[in-house]
Length: 353
Image (cartoon, rainbow, N blue to C red; front, top):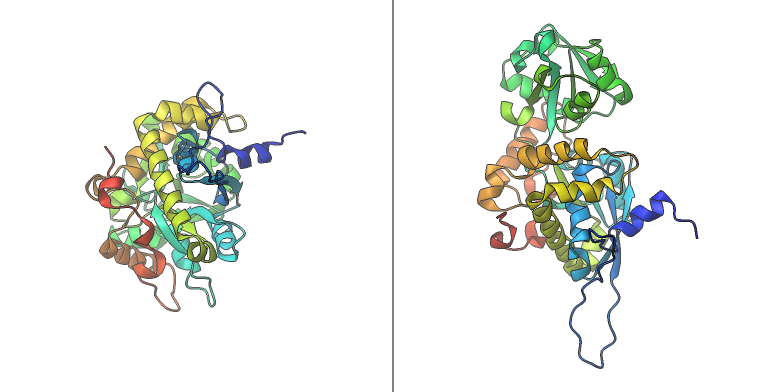
């Protein structure tokens, strides 16, 4: 049987693969001698973008045997966007998905929207940023006035830009926005056709370095450093699956926590595992990407104090207020409408050592 790339990815999270290329047997609960061994529960997990370093915690949850220990065989699929991934969780075609939690806030405001909720926050800080060239006169957010800002179709960062601009006293009209294709975002900035672009700090900035733009010529203006309260990527669960299999949801979350710990402790190994599952991935670039994600988005002071996976309800409410600067809610949601902490293990299990 010919194994396609997509079928390989679907097998990826079901069969943990060791560094030497061997398969680690999935751990199963202990049974009495007369009990037949239980089969793992197959679940579907959707990424909102093609596999890269962002997915390291999930790859390492498989490599470390954590999914197997929880009795789970996890198939992976790739959606076209967070909105697409949320829709798959909403209709039950995917049991879990990794999505931008702010996209989930907007989704839940739609009439008749399924009650999809996040159960684990991976990115304690959203990766929203403006990436600019210092050689174009931009070193701080205030330098954007009078400049040309490239905004890619479907970009999520621009949705929080009005709130960040307002908080920092920048007039939106003073920054000219140019709609561009995501495929030409980095090339246009590299060529000087725009002065800055919106994007994710760990994507555009690192991709630009790969295009030969010197690192010391890049200004990465992370919204989180300018008052943006937003959380970032989170695991959401299908409402039907959560109701039918609550223990499996808890097990999935525990496994992801284990995988995240492994990725943080050994990013070199985590990068190697991710790149081995990519088409043409660069180990150097993905390692730089993973280290940026861990430093800027995952391992924040809030996570060090409270543990990974949860939210600060007051902060989350403020982040919803910031979303409303660019989005008119029909009925403003609250933190409890978006995030369900009942599937999280205790704080001491979630602390990162």
